[in-house]
Length: 214
Image (cartoon, rainbow, N blue to C red; front, side, top):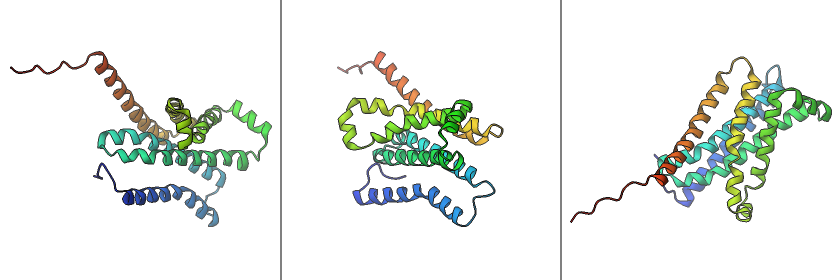
């Protein structure tokens, strides 16, 4: 188990390693594209890959708080912003693939598709909600917004379920993989709900003070 505190040098190495690891999906796509390894339907391959890694990034971001609470490794919180921004990065690649390679920026066709196909409507809604979170992820915005920053970033509790629903409705038949992501999301959100409920119960019925011995 990693220690609850890390030296600045060790944390920097860990953060750099995570940064590089988060670039792996993009590097893989570039290599496969250069070597004609994207299969018979390259656009679908890219769409699925970028969408999957968006969802993985969101779940990893949500996993930080439970891991920190269960392990006491408070330094994990310092990795959450980077994971969240990578989730947004792959979400942008996912959306760009659809707008550019699939629809060729045909605005009329895109609007018709959004209105006609529910999974696209849900996915686009998730991206729109994710956008202000990415824009306000800087330290300056945190200070400027104050308590409102935390309220705004709770939107991730809606964004992640929307992303799972988007994936579920996309695959239609074999829902094994989206069901797995949904199960992980239920655990992550369920843990938060349990912690919240326990805190409310403690506030309402505080434990009696220990009887002093005479």
